Length: 392
Ligand SMILES: Cc1ncc(COP(=O)(O)O)c(C=O)c1O
Image (tube, rainbow, N blue to C red; front, side, top):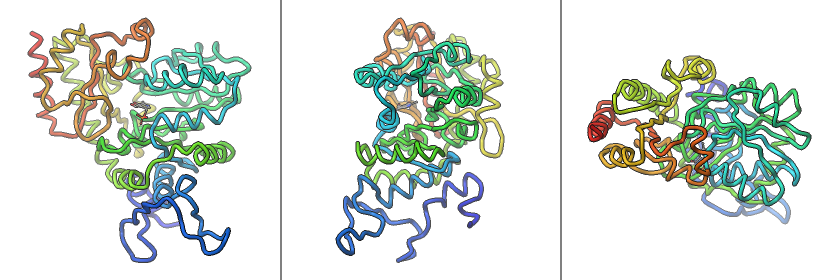
């Protein structure tokens, strides 16, 4: 097979699923913005019938996603939450999941307020060590769902250890890899069965596409997921797939820049008198820094820590003052786009998590989350410095 398809991560990000068009030579594969496909005779098609089931532009993207996560099968969905919902629909009423207690608020909401009504139950545990996970396993348990680093507390879970436990107990290990992207962390290589993404974030990368993905190498699971994908139909538009394929070509350059900017800003914030705590796995002071350096690695092996930082600045009032003085960072939900964003998890992204639960894992009213973009580092640091000075 061509080196373009088997080469390094950056080469595959640009070439897998992106063969020039066979008919015209167009270097960029055409956008198949169609719902249906002409058939040669009744029941005789050319591999494509109806875009909910399969579309060439989506198939190209799904190939790239699978290659980058190191899996056999990639499936794209209309959002991260619809990717997760499709995965949950694979299970049966009565089944049970063990889920990290500190995952994205929407994951908590869909599992507790939607799927629980269908008798799919979840236990919420601290996944920083194996004991609480082992204690929560019972005969109906089918999967362990983790997010690492977690959103927004940046706590880590040892993927290899949880995946091994899952394999020993005949469970699936599912990893939300949104915060890292496959450039920084590849859960399947560490033994997980499924990598799950809000593609909306680093993979699409420009805050203009809402999308999700699942990647797996499990044949039976992939067959079931494909069936649910076409049956329940939470698929992305061909245009969004085309845009995301375009974005993936620059994933390496973008994530390198996000990560180096974030490391510099985390070090700056860590030294700042107005900041009570900095949560960034790349700092040697992060309690799980050693695990981060082992697990979060660029494909060539160098540790890389991503673009997300959370800071605690003491109170809601101080958080409001700080945020209102930022100019380069925009106040908005979401993350992973080229532009820097700031948000207040307790009131914004994690409002659906009950206060007692939030506070139990440190998600206080003084917590602010930064999605560090790829602007000039001097401008980002000056922006934070000015806003922190307003707290004096
Ligand atoms: C870690 C994580 N997982 C899943 C999701 C859900 O993805 P989407 O918003 O694309 O549905 C998000 C969204 O913020 C997220 O941050």
